[in-house]
Length: 604
Image (cartoon, rainbow, N blue to C red):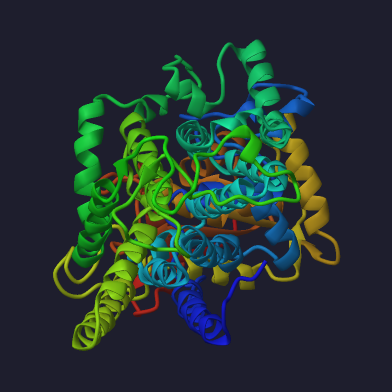
């Protein structure tokens, strides 16, 4: 299997991948994690279904002892993303950089797979152009630089797609197609439409494939890989009367333990549909969106039905007798549809390619209507937009000659510079400059520095070489067992110390989860909300914490709060008391020197 027709093509692709790598890995661990990244990374550290919210409890709090089957998945998502994160954390240690690393690698892999798919479906030039579009796409860069599920799901969907194309040439690939399809389902349920796309495509063009044993093996492989999640949901339903959170939302099940479930249930499918258009305008640059629209329009307009007679090239429609054995190959572009004579790939008509792209476009549009078109979900259009753009640009290039080609080359160069600048201005700078949606995308990471990583580094330095003299307990047996297990592992070679972490109740939950709950669960450091600490001292006396070094962390006007304008009376009282006793806080500043946190170090 040759991936490149020449050294020149290989070198061009290497340049594209190099640019993609810079955009995805530059300062990857710099920006704070202030979105769902924290919830995924925290669970990935120990593959533990804990999110620290009373509004969305997990099986950790429902069972004692915890059944073994609860390890097969998470209460709200399939397990693969957490398993991958766990592997990377064990290999490289726990940090923001490592939390994002597998997803950046997945984003880089997606660029390469887009090239392979474009090359297989259209032409080598179309594949290179599609990969270039994917490289500089602001939405693609945004997704790849976050520890969210979309990058891993997308790269597995693209790999499934590529294996599907290989299997249409040689059925020996169908078992691999099925196995990766199952893996994509284990990454995120949003990969389910891929099977529907493949089945509809086969029904239109390759019905006899349904009779092939290899295809059935592929379907079985997909089911086998996904089977742990099926077992998890069956046993969860038998035990609690509901499925996991995503299926519960889809089926509109009432789960008292999940008070946030209502937010996942769409209130209006029409609002979701119109929200897609508003979201696309916010997510993609005007130029990228215009080229994608042109590409989709071309897909819609450039094919027409034909009869079952031989076409002009003398090819017959596919029949069972014409399907290959495992040693034979067939061209997946043979079909019952034909293009106006635009030869895109070695003399084959490309209408089947166009319909496959359209099927993905329709399938994921319907999915976004069914769920909510959140900004990160718009990343699934990256399955279609770069390929459609690359295909139409390649066709336009072939149609041009002389000065027209030079003019088009100039346009492509300017477009690349604009998209690159748009993507950098959106994803790689602390503050974006210029007009929104023209100079930068409203779908952007939180590149503003909230000082969370600085606070984390400060505490890491303060606690270096130490381990908690006492292991905290919550009263929840499965959680306490996990804390004990991880604390024993963390304590090896460290000196016991009486340390207590106390923090302002209204600091944003992503701060408290990553900085304090992570140390509480995986390192065994006792941690209290200010309210909880004050209540404990009042009820049990200050002697409970005698000999402890206590760190109290609160924020400033530049901090990220749970709800701006609300304060904790206990937190305010504690800070006033410490200030009145002469304790001065250590300021924690962000990269531009703004004081974001205050840390009081004291004892009782």
